[in-house]
Length: 177
Image (tube, rainbow, N blue to C red; front, top):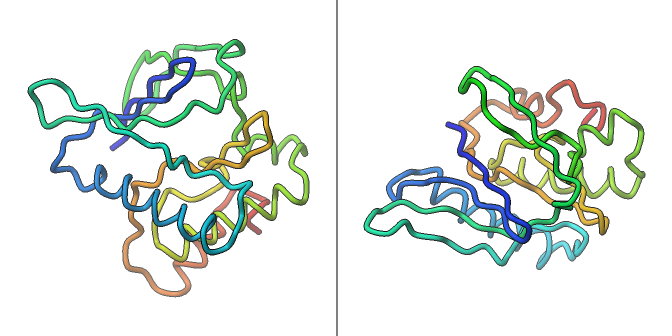
């Protein structure tokens, strides 16, 4: 189930999560596992999994928001009203207005070869750990050039080798082919 994302100038709030939700634990655990693998073990400092994550507990409840640094440019943020399968008439941040998804940069030909390599390394780490909704739609590129993986809370189901390869290389991304 999708969680709401709220953006302030300096931080991004995602939630609300109930303490008992598996996705809450996963979001924290997998984010740290990916950070250890990419930054501590593989020494890829350009890949960012925000290690300064903090939790905000709602007063009197077992509900939390996960808070991370905002790597976007708030001054450029534009919103629009949209509808999806889950919600109708929701205000969302217009894609590409404050930060870019790798999938959008890929389509426009704006991803450098080093960026493509970093993104593939990140996606492969997610694949190895069986975590995250992996694909370039969940990889962001900040103005300072950092590559940022998001949406780590999804757990991949047990699958055959063929299914794992298909998940890793799922369409429509050319980057993953």
